[in-house]
Image (tube, rainbow, N blue to C red):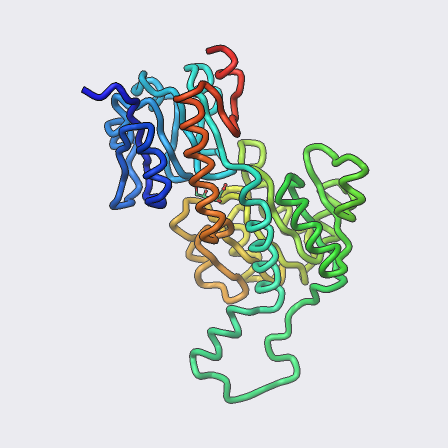
Length: 329
Ligand code: 8YV
């Protein structure tokens, strides 16, 4: 019998990353790539010391209790709201995410979605593809100005700051932000960003982009009351997590033109999308692809692999979420 640790890679990843893992471990993969039910995941994790997960796998107290041999869970994502971190930590299991490697790629996409939303890119493309371009008018698909406008950012971590730089330096935007904690003066100056309270952010932004982590306290951070405070000409972009926006309230606001438009990469209950959003023409919808370039997705998978290899072979970790677990080993 093999004495090498066994690990599970819960979703299909790149073959060269699997090959790296196989240098150290017996590796079970999910070549079909179908998301596993909680029961299937528990079954596949029996006897495994490590798991590489994505946002589609929930690692909670029940899973941890049912998989006593598990030592490390490495998420291929910077967000880790699919992890019950206190339960994982209490069981002495190390957890990791993939920060930094996706910051600029995700900021690029956030900006792409902002531009597409403000300038009605997909709506006008559908019109053209549908063979309706038999007329022209001065105000046809006239959108809202991006250059020189006010960019509001809710959540000012690494990705928020990267978006601020694009807005301030590339598009001459006035950047305002709200965050749990204010940035230091040097970072604010570099991002040309001004700290405001949430009410001022909602009221002043021409374009509001959401880049905050999902938690119980950020659930429905943008709901009917917040949408009512935004300008009727404003656009809203979410590249953070579904659940931060109340999708039903947003669908109503878009239908009634209480805000101009929205760009959404993430949804409550994805991959399902609220029917009111699917029906609305003033919303750009993408399937959770903000970090999706080949280079970045490979870097994310490699970083998750690095974490599992470093921990199971040397007791170290590259980007731990609960380093106290490694310290107690
Ligand atoms: C992931 C993401 O690709 O990093 C995150 O938090 O949302 C995306 O970059 C997705 O969650 C798959 O795990």
